[in-house]
Image 1 (cartoon, rainbow, N blue to C red):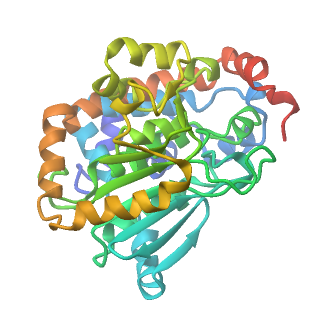
Image 2: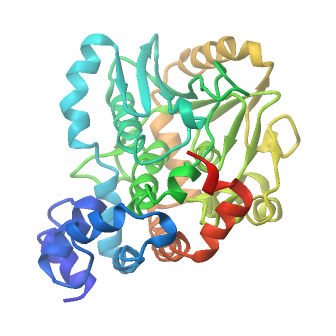
Length: 376
């Protein structure tokens, strides 16, 4: 049984939505040898990255085949844009209190804005398996909240001595956990098909194409310190970005040995092909307060003025109502990045990231550029 036949069987002829993690579990149970079993993955998960056998490469090939098919791939993209079941379950808790703490994120209602604060203070707000679900729940709830009109995304204070107590937007993927083997391959697909794409496309509805109808709000990013790797990728989905004048952006994917999410698809729309390639392949740093940085960031402010700048932007974007926001977002997307274009990109990403994630070069890069062997 091939991947598409399995997908059709598991989704009951594409009448049932199944997320990538559940899909891979179901496929492993339905057809022996196609994908690694839960037991095999558990054993593999205990190993450092350098000692893994690369069993999850099969998941990459399986998902790439599904995403390469227009019908199955679009159906899977739709499934990943639906609100999580746990988000629906926790909405009443958030609605009653006006805020909710989550693993890796905190959501608070503030006037007309739902403010999502990314939080992993020990690791400079880096993303890993401990933050993945919590951040997606926060994004779901912020979009589902009928009492707010816009959303704000910001990094929380961190613990590192150099930055202690200061806010940082985020340091990208947790390279220490990556080296230690604590980040599974499916993490990349769940993140980019799920929470990052929800920032860009909103929440899908079961009975409508995501390109025709969705739950959407404008997103405002507030960049303190830096946005590295995955956090720079997130900025490419925002509607308005405010950055501190001393903040900077980098996409050090080559030094890490991985593909930087959907940045290869989106960054060139902001800064052009040459600068995008320099950023991804040659670690070009982009200072927010530079001509290139201002192609990504809408407003540059002094670090001490960030709070006022956020309030001012929320007031500006909601002052005349936001009735056309969803329509304008959809109109931009259909011209720039239709869902089918994203699907085709993710088919390549699923295959190539599986190869990179288990490449010996990744380990060598982390040891050379990150001193990963000596970090805890």
